[in-house]
Length: 605
Image (cartoon, rainbow, N blue to C red; front, side, top):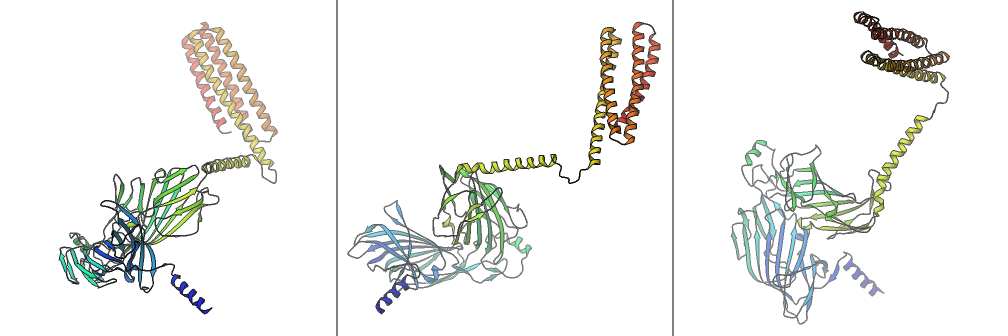
């Protein structure tokens, strides 16, 4: 019983870290290794070309790659390929495993597609990128000082296998080297240090080397990047990024001097960061760049054939320890990233954009907002990420909310700029929902307004108010009739002028008869309305004005009859023209005066 418990405990303790247990193959050796270490920026980029030999009697189909624990804490990216011939390579997928008796080291197993027979060789290439591996020394510098950093590593290939021959090349940021470890043979040429060739190096040899050199590259770290991708099936995808950037190089000693900074711009290599370039997709449009204050207009955008370069210039230069926040957004057409087959859709976009050269991103939060009604959501990342539960995001005209997929990832570099695949189902009929909601809402709004206007919601009937409204309607009708009467006068004045010119008595008699009929009808209609005002007990002032207007109209009609009589006499030759003109002038003056008085009375109703 105790034996089974002990066996169970050993199996559980070996797998509690979630890694697959594995064993080293002692029949593999590194026949020839060429290492390239690039520390010319804030990152440590390591490339290893290794020729592995199977010295055993049976074939092998995998090998292991080891990383010391101190370096593994800074590991951001690892990839490997195997060389099949002079021009072709096949990708390998490193898988973390644990090796017994080596708990202080980290291992990756690389599975070969083709087995390596006994006494045969295979050429592999391993690429890895490390962050936060360079330490500024001194940690604080003056504003115009150069930045010196320390790199700690090894001239040997840290491998679980013995190495027959190897050489290491270290590329620096400048030729100014304060000091470096001299593990012979070693040589310094310009900004390159060459260690080796070395022969017969044992497995896990980690002889340390320290290089102290000048490195004024931008030591910028993206502390947090919150990226929001909002998908619309109306032809647009909106992308917005909230970025928090910090200068993680040597901290600025003392106060900042604008004068010294302007003077220091004459030097090419200063550790302060004045600007950096962000690369966006070629189809990016409506780009905006702002911070908490507002839009930042000092930046520039350059449209290239395959990308859009945005030269971002913060409001102030970034020295060691300084930081800034900003928001960057743009739109892209959905047809370039969204693919459909019936009601099934595939969104394929970058998980992150190129923030700046040799970027280092500590934390990324990606939020993908899909259209309301999307279902069967399946997210596939190009590398391991953490995915939260699907949430709901509410915006205009949403009912149940839009599904939001949230992704988290830490410690990213440029090599992580890869596409993700997001599959989901969405019915095209749902595209009509929002337009129908708008139309329906407007219809209901207008319907409510019509009902509200037409219905009387008062509890007590307002008889006085109704009477006032009725009187106001009658007065408005009287004003309209008076305007019609004015039109009759204007029309008949033209008839009199034609009669004098053409002397057509029959036409004139007909027109006068029609005028008298229309005039009498309007006069009678106004009298009827006046009687209604009396019965409705309207204001006496209004009644008196209408009565006076009717009286003035009678006087005006009498003057018109006189003008008609004068016209008939002059046409018949009963009076001479001079006497006609004298009497006509007097008649027109009187009629004009009466017409003005009537107009004043009518406007005051």
